[in-house]
Length: 179
Image (cartoon, rainbow, N blue to C red; front, side, top):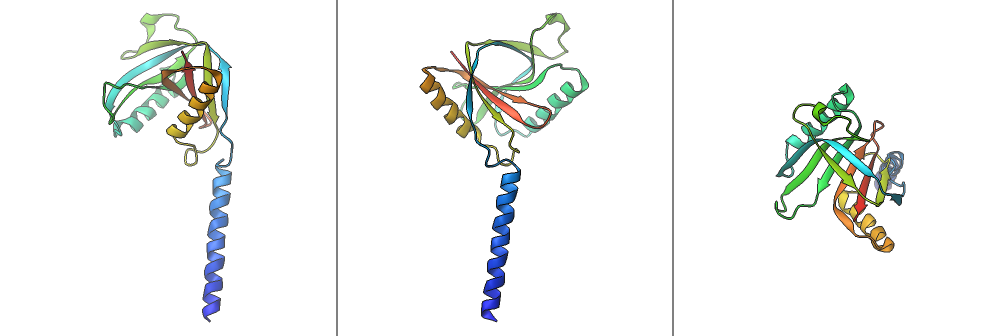
């Protein structure tokens, strides 16, 4: 009887491991994370700027409101989040610009009420595409480390901000731009 309980326990443990492994695999957990070096460009982002304590309960609501503004057509372009490295605001705070990337602004006076825009320019982009489910994506620090290593290999210095671009299929890309 004692061996039967151990056998059942072993079978349950093996089943749990197989289920966990297959779930991780299905969510894309084993997909490689590769840094691509791309030609530079200009980008204009229309949105709103925030400097606040982090984590903040308003952050997810702001993300959803931005997605809704893009989906409704109030904002046109790609869902974009720009994070700035800002040493003056403290370790427990965050500086970000939330909005939509557009190729160009034809008329600054036609921006939606309460929105502003920022323009960015670079000669080289380090980009990571992430098709993994958000539960198994690498964290921000892991991605930053991979990009920093690639930038050093390329002899480049990164600007103190990065872009997160969110696509309709729930995938995303992260871009760090060189000086």
